[in-house]
Image (cartoon, rainbow, N blue to C red; front, side, top):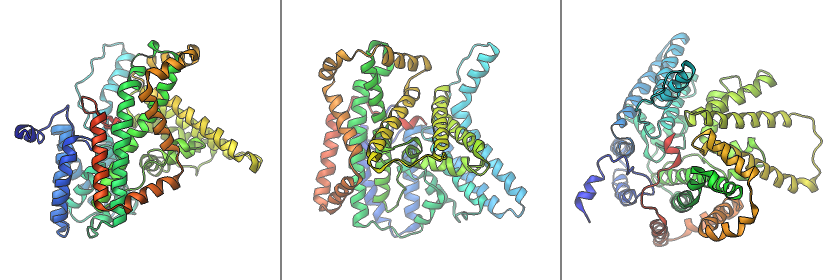
Length: 490
């Protein structure tokens, strides 16, 4: 063991973030667990230890910008208390607006400064020179999480915590800090005052989710990304339309395995620490329509946008036209949340328009479908929804609109099905992993629950063997460098 290499892990390195599937984290986490459970009965010491570890975890991702997380925590804790104790409604509103300006202003500076200046330069005819602005990892996630606390207190549905350390623990809690799920204060804060207790079911489910999350991210997502998907999206004109189409299917699986894999590991790690997070993904590609898709995909974000944006715009309370407009605006802003680019705005707009169209069709007095056609209609609905989502993923993933156009052009005008045999021969492992990924995604929920129960019922030694086997598999398939999670960029 290289001692110098070990101590280097405690310094920030842009190329080596501390992520769940990194070797150092897999070594460090058992040590963390031992200390955590030694402090389990000492409430304040436990919270302090986890908060310090969480700040270190974030420091390893964003360097000195971990001070922004600390500053945001202090500001929001103070403003939330002022809002709660303000006697006049106008004063409460003024403080809320100030909180929104601070949080969204912070988010806007890091994510949208160059985007706005690029638009200004194109309109004015000037030369655009981007500013050198570092985007702190997960800034969108902890900003939305912190805003839920302030907004709930303003609405009167939540009381502020009595100690800033409790709030710092909530905001910085490392399992979901940098890529979600977006945890609501109303759901999480009550848990920190409960005794630390991990049941057999919690431990078993935690191990199951960590193992499946590692497999999704470190085996399936990383491998098909590096060995196939990235090549297609980097130069779509070098490949036939058939290869481009499989590249889109590959990215649909990659982003799902990447993001849901992180969420699985985050939820699993939280369970091992005695905390419950809400489900963030629920087999979204099984959805029969676009509305169902958004009830299954990134559920913590979609419900956040619904509760704090869509309802604030009026929801469906002001007539059909306003309902459709509110859906479109919500998804446009959701697209902009993902990234400062017209590609993301288009991605959000397409989803918003699809949600509005589906809601309009659902409100029509149509005759019920005969029972004998239900299975066929469901399959067609799943295929249509999946391919619409895949079409939108092209704009989400492509580096620019020109590349997205090239990819779609190749698919629709240069499909070349005759290369299928050669394609299968050249990408055996990639296609095998894609088949495994999609088969696992479409297995019935009952099979997943039975598998989880099998892991839960295993003795501790078998759980350890399972975890070690997965780590070995990850090591065998890993690339030369660390592959950060896709949603780190948001």
